[in-house]
Length: 343
Image: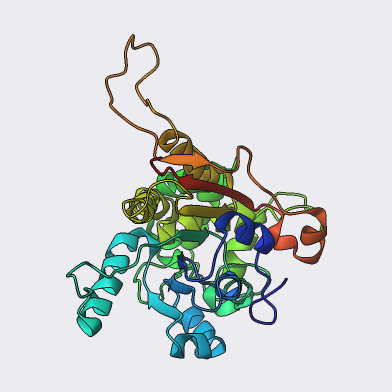
């Protein structure tokens, strides 16, 4: 199965459906709509009456998906919201309030009719449309403005950081977010280059990052880690992921309050670099443990109880076949977990 817009290939699509396990009548959240391939597949698998709340910071992405899946929007199965998954709880509450304002939100017995969500997906990668559009500034494959904003209404751009951050701050960004060994050299080179004039194009930055490094087409481009680091810094990606993870747990836990036994809601997260994967792995392991006290304490004093059951002891990665048809999938790692439901 391959869904989505022409030119965009959804990563680990079959694996997402396996672990998210959408069913007819289910309620699901795609917190990163992107090209809409995962959203479309979830809607197809949960037909005829499953629903998806699709969230994305990129207004252009939402507009494209809204047009292509207009029939799903019109029949109420797909709701699209511009926002960041870091504000997941607020977005979910706003949608519940909106539904309540239309139908009263309660049944004849006065019970709340808001429906809990059965699964949440986060695909932390970027769509081909974002990567291939030089005007967005995410890639150095074609020259364009040094932008990198997912949300175009945001003020801070990559050019702002590159031209105003101190040499020490730039080196920290490249080292911390890009795990770049040449962070100090690159930062030094940038500061001296911008003294002669502002750095405003992706081509300028790529050249500065690659200076002095031998490069062959079969190798990862020497500017790759610098561009990754700036994109993470500009969009606050790690901070937003860290904020979203506990909200995902709480939103899905709401489904367990209405049932005992059986399956709990599921979270599926696809990451594309080690910093993201480390956050997801640590969160899932912590929430799958009954005790999170520091090692060495004779007795548990934290009172923590496991709320998750890990479904992927090791991350799921793309097959060689998928990577051959979609090279951008090569670094993807999928982790999934399920809410524990009381027996």
